[in-house]
Amino acid sequence: MTEQTDPGTARRRWPGAVLLVLAVLFSLVMGVTTASAEGSLGPHEARYDVTTDDTVTLDLGPLGTLQIASPLPLTLGVRVTVQEIPEGLTEVTSATTLAALGNDLQSYVQLFSAPRPTVEAATRELVRDAIGRATTWLVVLVGAWWLLRVLLGPARRRELGERVAPHERQIAVGCALVLVGATVLTASSIGGSHGPQGEPASPVFDGTALAGARVTGRLGGVIDTYGAQALAAYEDNQRFYARADANLVVAWRDRQAAIDAQAAAAAAAAQAQAQADAEAAAEAAAASAAPTPTTPAGLEAPTQPPLAVPTDQPTIGPSPTPTLGPTAGPTPGPTPTTAPEDLVTVVLMSDLHCNVGMAPLVHTLAVRSHARLVLDAGDTTMDGTAVERFCVTTFADAIPKGVDLVTSPGNHDSRDTSAHYASAGAKVLDGKVVTVDGLRILGDHDPNETRLGAGTSQKGTESAVDEGARLAQTACEDEDGVDLLLIHTPDVGLASLESGCVPAQISGHLHKRYGPEQVGAGIRYISSSSAGATLGKPTIGPLNGTAELTVLRWDPGTRRFVDHQLVQVRTDASVTVGPRVPWPVPTPVAQIGTPDTGPSSPTTGSPTPGATGG
Image (cartoon, rainbow, N blue to C red; front, side):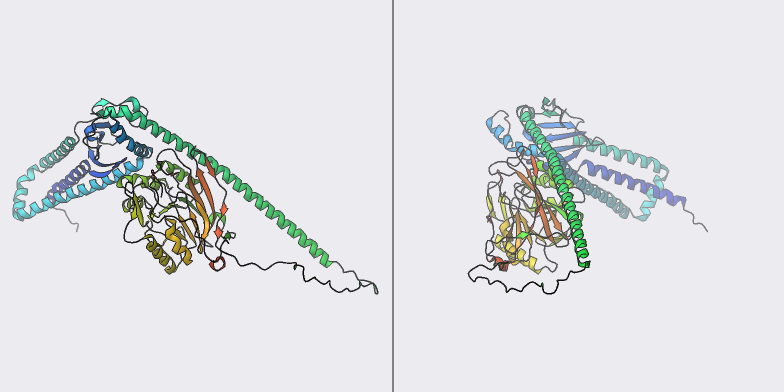
């Protein structure tokens, strides 16, 4: 027998379903239109609030606002309130104001050079907050509904249901209209009037993403006074790195062509040698098959005694191999056991100090080299502040899809920026061995921290020596072995190299390249700055010094690096790509005596970047 649904029951259910749908819609609208998030804007902390005035508003407090039409749908907009503009900043013509804004100029250039990470970070936080608020509203509404049901009781609910039954449809439609209308009115009151308000901005924005923006208050004077300066700096920055990126493409193509030609010549030489060897073997075989002539009787050659060798003359022949002394260095490595196409290509960068202009070049190099892994040897930011989140996010976004990113934070980084790096997709080393693309990598945060205006100090209770001893112990106790020690300050890895438990160490910090060279029982390579960091000069903007990136190839068969290749970007935007240089194999420590520890780096940091360095 087919079960029949009671029409009365169905009638009693659909108003509840309608109310539930309305509650969900109301919660979503309220969650979205009241969402807010804390973030950054250039050098400032900022608060982001969703509005419904169809406008993106930059609120600079006493200086006024800058408004532009919102690209968001459904009349949604965003109000960005910069929280660090001092109330006393009201004059726009004084030298003090120029100095105050000038200090932040490069940070604004940096922001507009790569705005997407800042926008995406703010969007993620707003979406997260909107979902949380919507969920809270829905829980409150549903909870209130069930609480009302409990308070009324079954009898009272039936009595009320019988009274409203004839008017259920009208009541449901009315509730829907009231809820939607109230939501729209509430949201609109939050955002204010629709569309940009105020005076047209300076023509300095013509041709940019801010074309058509309107300003209020004293901000118009600030834009007129300093806008051209900021825009010129931004355009210079964009042109410089676009030219450098194009030069990198050409330099890499030319070097690759040279490598291919060299490989073809080597293959041809090998083929010719093989053919010559085959011909020689054939001739020898033919000669051995021919009859051996005999000497007639009585014509044998007379036998003579061997010549005596004077005792005061040197013996001819190989001399015994001498024992290597302290100056003996590593020798070139053997031919890799893995086919070239199966080698793991690694791109190394270090001491970027928030120069996001280099991000496109990192991307290009990773793509052109077919890299599977990018290593960041630390000091990705300048001061480890929360507003530098967009720096690490920009570099993480520059890594092509499918390519891994591993970093060992430096003394200019912080736990906050490392957390942001991790959330953007980087693998942040924390004292444990991790396996990435077959490499077993060990590393940790730098034991020191450098802050602008405060210098360098030990970050916690663990000194550089203590951290070095801990990493060495971890490497030696790991059953599967460690292929690479990735740290920021070179000296932190001395104990690991001397222990013989780490075959290779990569680091940065010194802003000068050393190696690869033998230290202890392993090979150490110190990367120069990938931002062209020069003492006393900023790393933001066109390069003030040569920026360096390194491409390495690693053999999964021998678990050793095969070679390394230097990429240099100079201050005139020219780029050179060096040849592949074999990675050395360390000489056994028993043969070299006291190990040459190479350049020493201060364990307490080095001059602050420019302010950059160290």
